[in-house]
Structure formats: C-alpha cells, structure tokens
Length: 277
Image 1 (cartoon, rainbow, N blue to C red):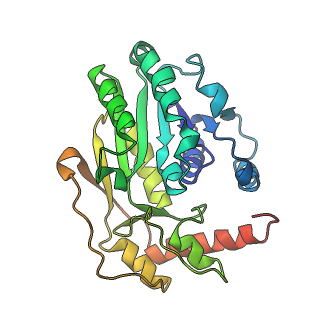
Image 2: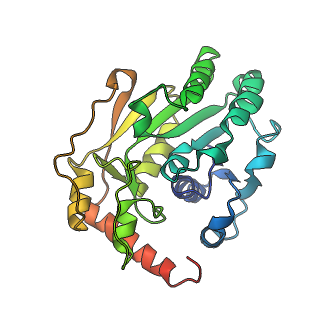
C-alpha cells in the first residue's frame, strides 16, 4: 500500500493506524472531523506525528465534496467504530457520505481500483435493522459494482489514546467512578497495536468480505477487567451473533495484556500533566 485515506484520522483507531502506516512509509491523507471539544487532544496528536512530508490533513467538510483527491489504488479506511463508541455518528453525515460521495462516484472508484475498509462496532452484527442499515446497503452496492470493500467488526480496543468512554480508561483516572457503557462490548478485547498491524496487513490483500475480529487470548476483556479490579457482572453471557454472515479472524496478541494496559496507564498519566486534557 502506497497511499491511504483515513476518515477519522484523529480518532482512537484512525490515529493509531495513521501513525503505523506513516512508519511504514505510506502516504496518508488524514481526514478529520472538526470537533471543538477535542482541540487539545488533536493538538497533542499533531505533535506526536510531527513534521512528516507523507502526512497531510483535510477537513471532512471539504474532502467529502471532491473525487479529485482520490487516486489509483488508494485504500480508504472509514473509522465508524470510534464515532459509535462516543455516540457521535452524526459527525459522519452518513446520508451525504453515501449518496453524494460514494454512490455518485461508483465508476471512478471502480476505474481507480480503490479499496474501501469499514471499521465497525461488533454490536452492529446484533441488529442489522437499525439506523446503520443504509450503510449496509451501500456496502452491498459496492460489491455489486465489483468495488473492493471490506468490513471489520471490532470488540473493545484498548491502549494509548483509548477514549474516556471506555471502562479501562476510566479505571486509570483517579477519583472517577467506573461506568461500563452499553456501547462497550465486554466479551472480548484486542490491543491497539495488534489491531493496526492486522489492518495494515489485510489492506495489502484483496479481501472483500466481512470479518469478526477476535482475540487469540480467551477471556481477554475479563482478564483486563480483573487486572484493573473492575466491578462487572460475571454472569453476562456473550449474545449470539449472526456469524454466518461474517468470517471469524483471530488477532494474535504480541504481548501480555497487562503490558498493553500499563502502556495505556503511562500514556494517560502523561496526558494528565498537560493543561486541558
């Protein structure tokens, strides 16, 4: 992969993927949602990337209106997962993205051999009839037009830059009661470095299917929760998922879960020392 476009480049997964691909020498067009409340965090992320000739930013509002920014063999990553977790799906402007950008430019995407990769919450596998059904329909249209589109359904992702909506993040912030959101999938977890490595490798292939990503560590979320002394209902059973519609793909853990959590703790402590974060 020579070039990638990342929608949500300053979100948790989008940013981690951006850094990983830059380290591999990939050119990145980072498309970000201009959210005022995240200005401090975005500033720190810009500093972490530093001056890099292979990275340039675009505001989502201008990017969405132009096909000219898409080049041959681009890979477009769309980080919906983070918007779902933070209940900010409105930032995606889904109707405009699908109808005014993707569907109107099907021929260009096919001619340019663009690959599209959706990063989705695993919860969307539970009920395909909710508001995201329009997105699922668009994915079907891509496939009907022989455009490479891959969907990855993700459990809890943890590590540096994990949003405060997650219980792991809350556990590291002293003086705050941990609240497990209904949007947090407590039945599995994957460390961020292992995820972005797998996404990068997968993007080199012509996948074109839907994948349920699972950790190679049994009870990964529960092990993390116990390490952090989280209070959770041990009797919560993992709900049945329509696995016939997706391919299960195991993500190998490169390090102990405790090491990943300590990296996240160290990063949070660093951010706590910065004003406004």
